[in-house]
Image: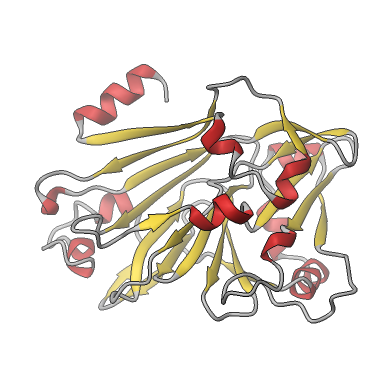
Length: 288
């Protein structure tokens, strides 16, 4: 994150965490990611986040995540690709609270949510303002869908170990999905990481047709559509594409502009709701 922006955030009580291209990132590149040769220098920014955990819980504001795309070379196809930026995923600890976080997309993107015991995974596809509620006991992974960096806000109770997460599974198997853009072919490729198919645990995707090697979906996307952030609309408005996702164990869902969370309706931006009279978000997450 640029110095001036970081200073501004820190003055508001945020702690900035830059995720860099280093050994900690490379050890997440398992399975489908192993064929990629990223065009990045050691120490370059992969994505960044800013967590807000003030001493006074009533003063908490949403956390921030910014995820750019990454240039790479696909060694299997022997062609240059754009890897749609990703948080690389993390596992949300099973907790007595059924709701761990709420995310709001400030630009086009998506989130894969893989809950324990489900045979399929959910792909929440979002335009600006789309919101997703994260349950406990699941894997969640953010993806950028635009030409410019993805921006999200999220709100949770980060105090007293109430929102514990880790990347142990990602260090073992990598992210659940790889999404790339092939500019010269005009296509976005959604590829399921084979290390998440028919696992022995209760996570990932259960596919019974083990002889079908078509573990990917191709979405036609021109350079102009890519630059205009049209990938979300292309996915949500095409029944054929929806059916192809279903065939590989992915359930498409649209991130809604309005959600119900306990006794409140969340239909305004999180940054406004966090400072609204009565602090409804803080009550939902037991911060007051």
